[in-house]
Length: 125
Image 1 (cartoon, rainbow, N blue to C red):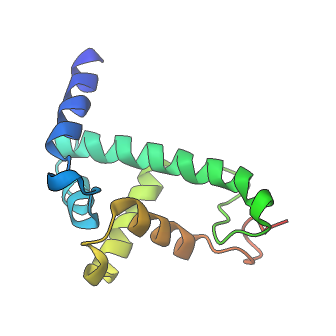
Image 2: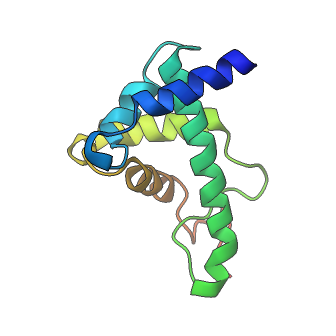
């Protein structure tokens, strides 16, 4: 367990963008396409988990804004595996956006996958 944590921490330093820029979609895509249990794979899982938790937190904030564009399934949380699949598909379908901030492009992917107003998903209050 400590070895994995050390590997993830090392990867965070390796994947830290030059000149203090945010992680790009291309960098995240590269990490998410590495072999299972590789350093990039562990980094991708950690990033995805944190991002999905952030998006879930954002749902609680939406009441203050009065609306939301992201409405994930009520029945079950989105798994890291599902988040990765959604991200990879979005990356492949939108290569022109890979230079943008990874959090932004991942957010767009999740909003596209789980838009509000669809009868199968949560709808804004």
